[in-house]
Image 1: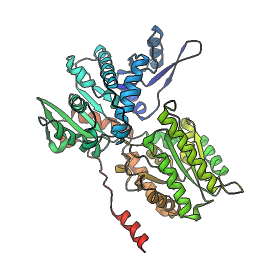
Image 2 (image 1 turned 180 degrees about the vertical axis):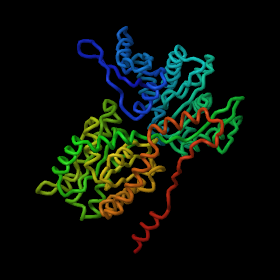
Image 3 (image 1 turned 45 degrees about the vertical axis):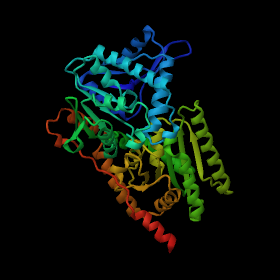
Image 4 (image 1 turned 90 degrees about the horizontal axis):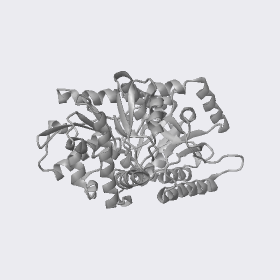
Length: 492
């Protein structure tokens, strides 16, 4: 297993010692049981920019007798700056989220990205055997297969992209477009979150690599005598674990306390990392529009917006934080009433798992409106935690989760603040029976396509003889019906 970071993160204490803490997120939850059951090695950066003898000892202590090994890739501060903060997050992250105007195509970043991918490859080569399966994760390591093949590794290589893949006209902006695309085709299996991402990738292959042949209804690419399998594998969550936590006495008490503090209100929840792809300013604007357009919502709803700090030492992110806080202040200043109603409760901090689940359990409505997301697991976590069956999910159609959750969620275009405002009002007015019908469908979808099914589906696709056995996830295409209904109302 190869990812940017290890599943355990190291940090130094004030006295120079090392402490380790388990990594968080669905990837770690899904893949650690695989390594425990089968054995193996996880390659990644341990989170500190130095390499003393105590690092490997600390990592060995972190895994204990778990049955697998951690192999650290040690990076210096300049490498972290160029490879991770530079090329990964100032080039690939905005470009792959259709925000190319925010890219910084610094050639020094590209050089650092190549050098660090080479460094990861060296650690993989130190541990990999010919009969291993090497599974590489995410946009930080797009060049890894090319580095490994160049070094002579013959083991099967799989790759999964957790973020979106851009359409051709946006991908073309990348100065190193041919090199990156050709390097991806050195993998044996490439997995995407959605059919949309898979189609975008194949469109780029057809346009930029005329020697490549796309076959088997887009499931196979042949180039230079090499065959690459391509598929869509939407990642899930450990739905059972979230449901059990949401049903625990501790979470129930915390959720009831939260609702008691805001009685007789529809609690609308937003949970996001501080990032420009999450669309938080547009969401706040849509909420303000809803309060203006539907005065009956005033005093009845409260938006609880949680923003998890992320890279706020970077000016662009610091400016985003300032913009969010200005909007919260403006909206609260416009609508706050004597007697205690404040329309937005703003939380700027990371929540631990139990607090987060309590927020999910307490909320009546989740407002998940990213400008673009590979999947968005917050939407799925909310559904898994809505054990009462009466929650409502408002979801951006540009989240990868829209394809799986379209039959129960209220889908919106986050750039259309009036339509999003209408969806907020609609969610508040949904009859209880309709809420239960929608949430039942959502919870069923989240349980059926959980994170363990994702792991199994990807690994089976790597070895399946019949490409027809590839999973075929549901697609999502916007409908004109909602827009037509809006104009019919306006004209009336």
